[in-house]
Structure formats: structure tokens, C-alpha cells
Image (tube, rainbow, N blue to C red):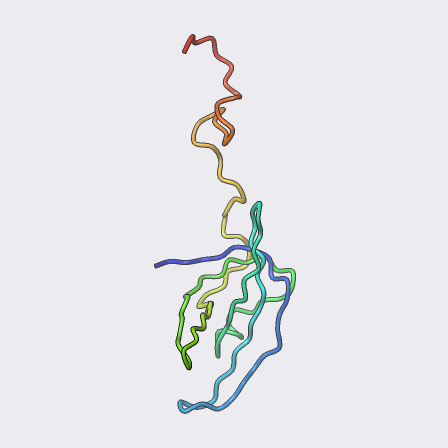
Length: 118
């Protein structure tokens, strides 16, 4: 599954680190605001060396390639959105895709200017 989110980095949270059973770890979360009529804010996590390899700054327009993972702990479920790759810019994405044919809109065929009787 190839999941990606396109948007603007609105906030970078403080890096966290610790020691686990597999050795030291570190992670950093950032907030990505998606584009569109109803923008959403998504907290995305970067882990380990990925933080240095895919540096993001507040205000950057990026494409984040993500994995979504849920886990259970004491009867509650927690979901992480983890970035495995970051590309600067929107990757050629358009905010609103063009209609499939000239004159076609979501409201109907109001822009057609022809003399056909049907």
C-alpha cells in the first residue's frame, strides 16, 4: 500500500529519546496540514536516522510517504502515522484535479455552450 500525505508543516514537536530493549531510540513528531476544502492536521512521526536524512522545517511544503500502524496496550488502541520518506514540495500534486471533460463540473454540465437539442 503506497500511502502519502501532501501538505504544509505547521509545527515541529520536541525530539524524544530513550533506551529500549533493542538499544537507544529517538523520534520526532511534526504536524502536517493537508490541502483541500477541508484541511486536516495530522501528527506524523519520524524515527532514528530518518530524522536527519529527511529534515523538515516549519513552513515547508512536503509529501510524506507514510505507514499507519496500530497497537494495543492494556485494552486501549493507539495509532501511529510514521514517515518513511519525505520529499520537499508537493510532488506535482494538484489541489483540485481537473474535470474529466471540458465543461463538466461538480454542479453539472452548466458550462456547455452547444446547440444540441439533447
